[in-house]
Amino acid sequence: MARDTSPQCKQCRREGQKLFLKGERCLTDKCGVERRSYPPGEHGRGRQKQSEYRVQLREKQKARRYYGVLEAQFRTYYAKASRQPGITGENLLRILESRFDNVLVRLGFAASRRQARQLILHGHWTVNGRRVNIPSYQVRANDVIAIKASTGAESVIRDATELTAQVPPWLQADHDSLTAKVLRQPERREIAAPVQEQLIVELYSK
Image 1: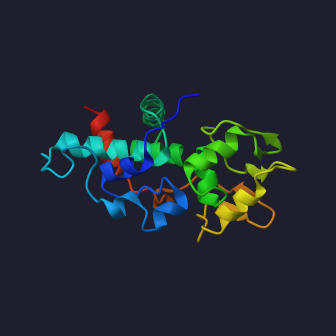
Image 2: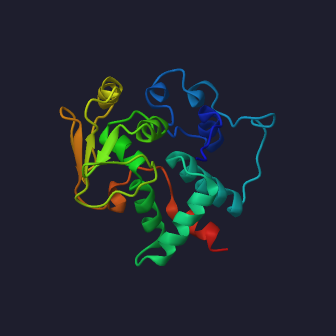
């Protein structure tokens, strides 16, 4: 299964802001953006020419890295969003937010999307009573998410719940029993991603 194995702190530095790819580490002084607030590479501290295309490309790359999606899959999501009724940019974010790995992070059951992906691949979670081991699985309204019985990852998951301050209103979580329910699809104002989706739409519309 394809996945991005590049250094995560360099990804945040390239985008010039914290994407919280490493969970708790991003909240400490060890964060790469805190230590070196310039882009990685030999010319990272040099002046970079700004253009409309560059701004749009960086926004697309930021969204892709924030959700941990590779280029081909991101393009597939955009094509699907463009065919749906409504605003394409909002449809795209709604699809990305509904990924199973992202939902676990929003619920507080994983400290980062990479950790969520690993927990899913190892079969620690069920949806509606059935084991789901696909990180890109799209959750739907009224889906019930629960930890698999007698899993060995319960302590890791409970540690992650301590980092969560608030669960978005489109989700419902019970951190004691480690269960959750998807109440509905998220609205744009409820999506906390640091992304300007209109720039992505402009990039793909060229």
